[in-house]
Image (cartoon, rainbow, N blue to C red):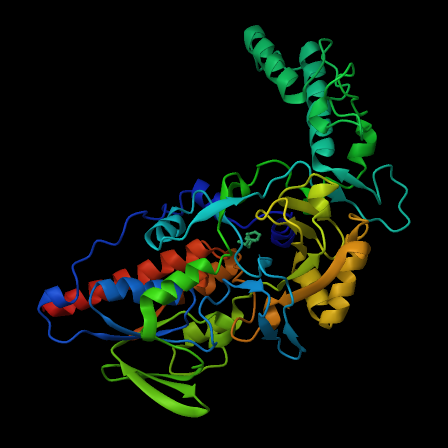
Length: 525
Ligand code: PHE
């Protein structure tokens, strides 16, 4: 499986890294460093921070606690960067695109960027606690959601039709359990296991696959009941569905990576996942509130210079170049933005900016008149998966049983995101609807309006997140670990937690710790 396939289907390499012992768990506690002022060192040290995303704001927040004088320059009129919640009134114009204004009804929204917090991202959760951001469950894994294998002209029994994840999942579990039990019954594994262990393994398989007393898989209520035949009052215990055939399942295409996310397999997508109540932007909003006038908005940086004793930054304010001097700079700009910056940055940093690839990724929010996925399909949160360009459909994990609702009609990566992102917003909407209708026939009758985004075309972001492979990690990553003169780097791209808010937060702490250690060192001299 290529990395591309892997990302498309599942999740990045965090689990692997943890397993290989290359990652330390994030500290969950507040930083415990002596404050700047307490070192008896005269006026507070000035730090200019580029970017009011989570990395920049967490840096300013922590440095502020230590007595540093921080200013954040933010190109946009809002804080949060790629942590961005789309709701009625949200506007954006992509590079080369048309202006969009979101028309969702009050209370409806989707998270255009960061959208889920794994339970093991303890540092992110620590900031939510500290900033009083209430959380709710993000339901990522939903056995009631659908799989759809689109095979134009395909004849396979399971092609071009939707089926519930629970059907595929439990049939495959059942058959594999049955096959393994048969192998055990035929003593195929006697060399490796004792008789007692084999009996225990058979017990496990009976439960795992829900096999009958003859150790055969004949279907199970784990895959649900026939329509209008759920158990209830009266004489019927409910009508079970028939399992799909093993051969049909194996030839269904569902073993492709794009579908392979059944159950809770993937470390970053295992329950419990969380999200802030009311939208992910509750986190940047809370940070921005703490920082107040330390953030200068609408201030895109155009030059970053090294001086004898620090840095000089030029930014545009009301169309005029404005200068800011500081002792240190923490640069959190995504690398695609660093690429275009006039700067004295070293060759190794510039090469990192030039050559670390960023993922192309996009989402569309679709508002519907009615929550048909809940009312008709009994889907409350979770994700349907398909090999069509839309890749995934996300159902909202909030506002259950409400009237209207917003689905994420596509969430795609790489080539699919590039193709869809290249379309006009009208064409994107059409694509989301014509492909989505194959899974949800209710689409045409219920659709109201949409808002789409392609992160690689969004000004000041220029991509979803950094995507390293072993080679780029070795070649370019080290340059971002060291300060370049008095310029420090932070942001998810400076971590092994790329594509996660936790990356932004850990990188901020790292920058704060290195600056503070350095100040301490030369204070003591
Ligand atoms: N963290 C992002 C998400 O949950 C991006 C991501 C997608 C990361 C897939 C890894 C794998 O969607």
